Image (cartoon, rainbow, N blue to C red; front, side):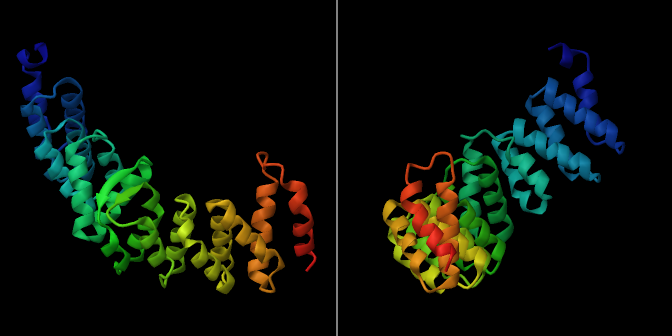
Length: 275
């Protein structure tokens, strides 16, 4: 009340548009800290078009935290055009249960626009929390490999209309090895036992060590049955598959929480190393 009566609020609102960036930044900071009424939010909104990037950035972050739903939506619409650090900073100002945030995520995935999709995926990955996003199968065909990479990286955090196993099976066939690796990682994290035969087939044919190692790791983690399938490669005549299987299984045995299987497996592992 005193803040408004003294006229300081009106002064700060006018300073938001100042050509002096220090003054404008100070005004935005104080308005958000001391006054959160509609007039102050409107004044901060006007700074979204300030000629100085630092002021525009400060206004975007402030509105995401204290603006009206309409003002928050306006900021989110501009997210794809903002630098990565600012996109993350802005979106983290929104409450986790914000309807504005949920609407943005759903619309981003529906749109198929690479910049919006990447922004949504970056947020979900940085927050590390499960989100409902609707259908994502159309993104598997995105011409932008970064979209496909981040989609499978984030898949364990996405509640989609499609079955995860169906999405991952398509990712395993991607022409970009980086996408395939992310799909493999997703299969392990989600423990998609239905994909074990495909993973075994991929490992037997794989010639790239990084991809083969991830395939072996996924098989080791999905289920006891998939682990047994991986153990079968210890006696394989396929050098790549035999080597990564031995490496992954040995690493698991050496972990502090290995479950008493060290003695039973050591003979096989030592035998495979001497091949």
